[in-house]
Image 1 (cartoon, helix red, strand yellow):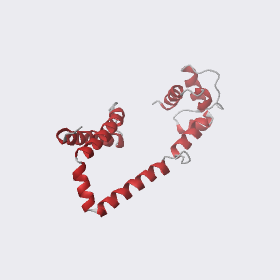
Image 2: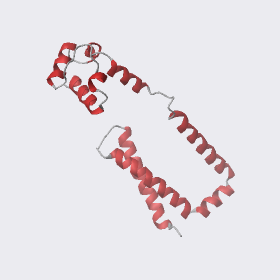
Image 3: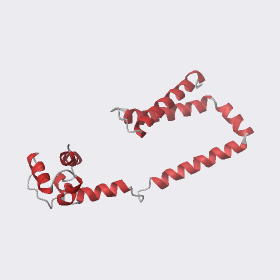
Length: 163
């Protein structure tokens, strides 16, 4: 099967433009609602487009790298180090400080969370009870109140920090 350069090159360029645009939006926290979804699917399209582009231009790539062995060695080294970095920085052993801080935050009693808000601990208990959460006191923590429900936890945090 012959893969045409006439559509693999524009597809690769288009996928790259989509990936870079959505990547920049996500980097600068300009969430347009669908950016993450487009970025994830665009990544799959980009990978496919690049593979098809390499297949369509295989002889050109082969000729270039045979004549420029340093470039080939550089490409192999970059691929190796990038792969190694992905394994090192995404290993389960590496903990992200934000996860640790968030876990400590939701495990802390309301009386310790209150100084971070504009409410007293008694006001927080009252606000949460008014919002439908029952049997609370200043020793309660958000993790226990949410009972493992992430949506409920988000609701708790939004009640406590609403303006």
